[in-house]
Length: 217
Picture 1 (spheres, helix red, strand yellow):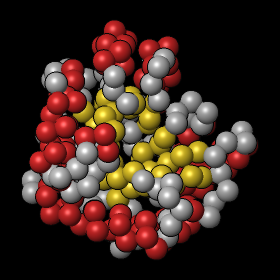
Picture 2: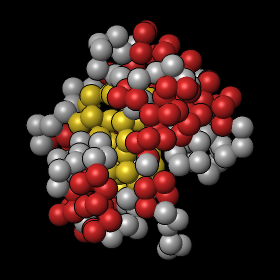
Picture 3: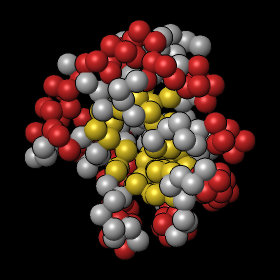
């Protein structure tokens, strides 16, 4: 069902469905639900909490694991070597910590830089004006592989934020990351993924569309 909805949104936007990565947001989901999602063919799974991710590692076999939650610097050591992509790099100190710890394990860690596209106090991320400098710093770190940008826009009027994000992503990819590798624009969740796809998203996070409403925790 989720694949069909993504395909419909992509075709409506004049895009190919296979351009869109389906990430299952598995926060609070039990192992059996995660296994069903992987068996059904999701492209990756994403966890928000470090301890929950560590507790459920056996459930992820067969799919790349992404960390998609807000990340504290003292928790980075638990992710290096265990996740293929960290979505929520929201500061230079965090970027430096990931680079240092990845270097200690001789790993080049793939990351996304998070943009606080709505300039909201409740969300982390680089400002729209500061993201280009962060991108320049990231691309010159030896143990960081910046794969693209991520944002979670305000709930109301997401279209204008998606449009601004797409413009900035294209600008940075052309000017800073002209290496063919930074091909991820992660934006769009269950309530707005169809709009995000229309504005160039290459990765959407779906939770309730896959698993139903999440229990309050």
